[in-house]
Amino acid sequence: MTSGPPAPRRSLLPRKKRGVERVAPPPLPASSIRLAMANVRQRKLGIAASAFLLALALVALLADVLASDLPLLCKIHGATHVLPAVARPAALAGYDNQRIAREIGDAGQGWAIYPLVRFGPTHAQGRPPEPEMEPPGFGRGHPLGTDAQGRDVFARLVHGARTSLTVSLLAVLAFVSVGGVLGAIAGFFGGVFDAAVTRVVETLSAFPTIVLVLVVQALVPSPTLVSLLLGIGLTRWPEISRVVRAEVLLVGSAEYVTAARALGASPWRVLLRHVFPNIKAPVVVAMTFGLAQVILLEASLSFLRVGVPAPIASWGEMLSEVRDHHGAFWLLVFPGLLVFLTVASLHVFGEALRDLLDPRIRLEGAHVEHPPGARADPAT
Image (cartoon, rainbow, N blue to C red; front, side, top):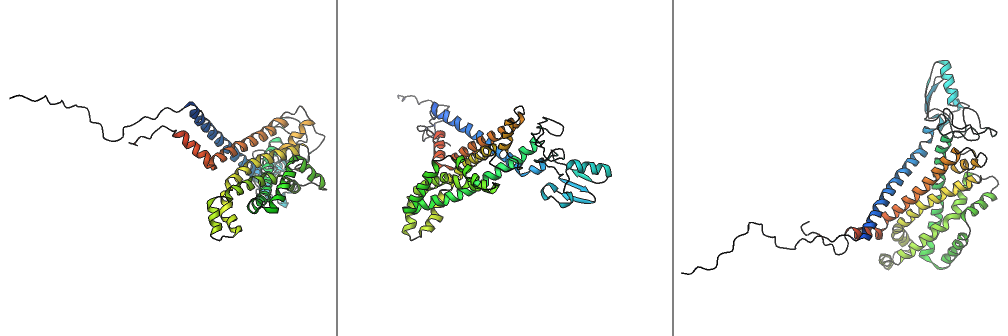
């Protein structure tokens, strides 16, 4: 009896599972790696810019807590006053931190909680500004020195942040409202109105904005903060109008807009319910860049001494004092650094916001994470 072939030896290794074999993704190309690293750096810069802008907004909001000529909370002559620097009660008219401290010390009664710096943006050492004073430099109670009129630089920087942010926000809201409405109507309805708006935009865009604002300020008998806001709002709306008009023309040709019109929706309903919600992202980004431009414009006008009227604190007005006192470097370094950091942070934040709101850029980021040729692991 012949024996058959020997049976194959059974392997002790586990069998391979049936199905698609695991394929390791190919290495990323160098260009994709560089793009991914650039995206990471941009995200970090965006976070840093957001943190700086948030801190600046808090400083502007709490300016009276950081630097003021009156206490945060005090009890004097039997009366308690809460935030007298904001309320400005009649009982404390003519008082400042130094006088309150003297009277509390002499009487031995009362108490006060003082701000970080005991000087306001318009007074120093309890006396009104004196134009003939020279910058005394860094002294006791003045961490960043004083200006030519004896006013505390830290107090004017803090309150100048409030001025710059307030002016920029109000001006941006003004010209976004005007430019957004005109651009949307011109792009959606077209016709004669579109042609007229386009001609006005082209005419105003031919002149520098600072020249137009100077003309508006010169036509006003006594320039005020309101006239400055109106001047900026009436001269910068063409930029927003161009952006909104282009987006309305793009969205107006979409299929859902055509379907809404086919269903009998009125033109205004289509514009308000279907077009406006889809153009918010570019308008918000344009507003962010507009804030940076208005802050720089306000600082330039105040440097020329035709911007924010005195005695309101302004970074540009502080920079203008260097022309009369060349040795006072602190009047150049501190406000100039704040203007630079604020404008740069707004530009970085605007770019990060644009990348976040633009779906095409998000798709490019997903394309970098899963490049062509890299198949996902079926086991995952």
